[in-house]
Length: 297
Image 1 (tube, rainbow, N blue to C red):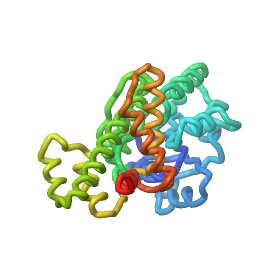
Image 2 (spheres, rainbow, N blue to C red; image 1 turned 120 degrees about the horizontal axis):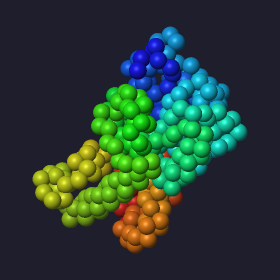
Image 3 (cartoon, rainbow, N blue to C red; image 1 turned 180 degrees about the vertical axis):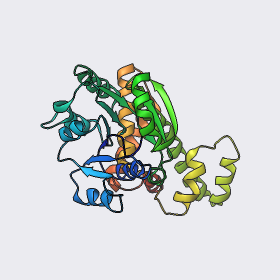
């Protein structure tokens, strides 16, 4: 796709959405954006080539002006508002419209909204991302994609403008499910890493060497490799993913456990610990700040 093609709709210019939409512009796509923040709209327009960025007053106007619409929104409740609310996407949905939900939504809700769009001849794909704000800025996110071949063929160029690893996961809703389960596994590893570091500290061990041992041994995980020394031992606590968003993903995994009837006891523990951390530290601190809760005991 290029500036000669129709614009890509983009709703949600937040911490991840803004750099992702900038990547679309940088790769020659025109963007028709919608966000309630004046500052976010100004940031997208700043430095953009003439004619590459336009703004719509509401989601319906985005759907009316673009055949492919990306959503990068905080949760399923807000996605439903954007879809079903006054002047929402459904109000302007038509045959051929493709909506790509790139946030971390609940799989069951994703399937429900996909059904509503299908009734109007439109389609929805789920394409949540993995990676930090830094990767969003460079267009190197990992993107999981749920949807059929026809929808993927239309979405692929847009997705590749924002990510380098595209993983197809199956039917609509499967990508949101896999994202939530992946983040549960990450959270469990991060919690174990934080507790191991705290015990090592209490023993007077060299935490840098402990990290080296874990990374050279069976305890290695993404938290030991990219968070232990860089964010926790350093005291920086700035890994690029908010504590509240981690709790939201754990709650989504919890809804999957409830739906499937799986007694996920470790998931329940992680949800409890993250809820405690959010209550004590607030949702906006970095997810690695769970270590602060571990240190308090």
